[in-house]
View 1 (cartoon, rainbow, N blue to C red):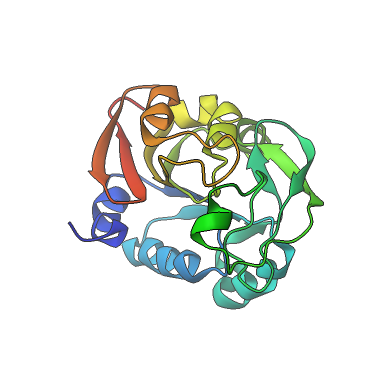
View 2 (cartoon, rainbow, N blue to C red):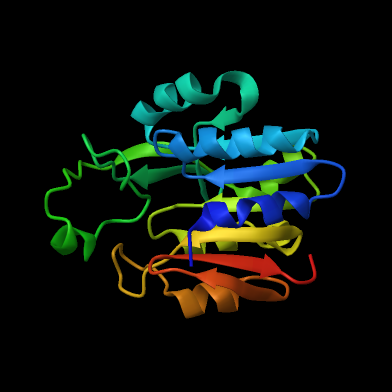
Length: 207
C-alpha cells in the first residue's frame, strides 16, 4: 500500500505546463520541504502555498523552505475574518479551529491550550485574490475541520485534480465529519485513489 509519497510522482506528472500546490496545515514543515523538493525535481514552473495558523510553527516552516514556498499564517475555513483556535502547546501538530473531543481520550498527553483568535479565510476567496484558476494538488491536514475547508472551497475543489486529506470516522474534534461524508460533499466527480487508516487520496476525474 505504501504511503502518499508513492503517489507524488504520478500526481506531479499529471500537471500540464506548471504545478500549483496548496498545503493546508503544515505543522513544522517537514512534509512541506519534502513536497517542494519533489516539485522542484519536475523542472516545471510552480506555485506552492502553505497555510498554518499555529503561530509557533511559522518560523520552523520558513527555516525549512525559505522563499521556495509562500507561507500564509491563517486558517482555511468557511468564512473570512477570525476564528477561535485551540492550540496544542508543546505538541504543535494537533491544534484546530474545532474543539478537541475524542482526541482528549485517545491522546490525553497532548497539552491543549485555551483558545485564541486567529485569521481565517475561505479557500475560494484566497484563490480568487491570487489568480489561481486550477490546483493540481491539495494536501489537507486540518484536524477535524475538513467540512469547513470544503464549505469555503467548493469552486476551488471543483477545479482541483488531487486531494489528500486526513479523516477519522470518530469525532476526534467537535463536529468532525467521517470519510463517507467528506466524499459526498466534494464538488465534482471524485474517486478514492488510495485509502489508508487515517488518510485518503482522492482524484477528481473531471476537474
